Length: 268
Image (cartoon, rainbow, N blue to C red; front, top):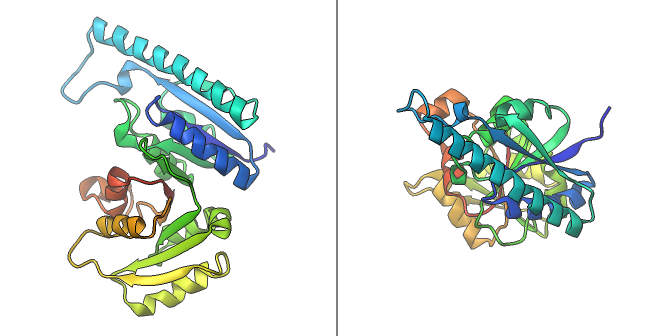
């Protein structure tokens, strides 16, 4: 059986360097090899809702863009591997990220990728596929992120299965973090006890506090708490209401994914 590995899915050059930088730290923490992949999507994945077909020029232009991205990513990966001391090469597939991720199901320990809304058309479903289709833990890295990673973690606590799975999946990072702040938004002091019971065995120095939403969205409160604690990652459960309901009424997960300025450590 193949040993577990960390999968970095580079959907484009946007945020690629940031993802690879985080992958270096994750690889050292987990003592696992890093695999890097990119999928060249076909025209069928890029057709806009208002279009039934693409013109010959559009198909050719998009194909050229995909080839150019692949070559740029090959160089970025080669340069990163040289610095990281690895022999990793960019693995290139064709089709779409969802089909490619199925090949890594139960093999990859987690997936690292860039914020989906920052990516080109045809490459915006990778995070959803990793979380909801293949059920991988995911580290989402905003392309603007230049800070450290996982030295000061914020846990957005809610006593639900996805959050407990996130704590389990990212326990090695919580265990070695210099600072772990656990925030309970609008839940009252009584909710601190189960949070402490779940986290203290992993991060004995973790701090716990309640925060009032004061009519604001939970995502906005969490991001403000992250700024206040100088966090470099938020540990969170993702899409606990399921995929379909989140399409209809975006919840905290969707808002954090869209608005976060720091890495999100998520588990479905």
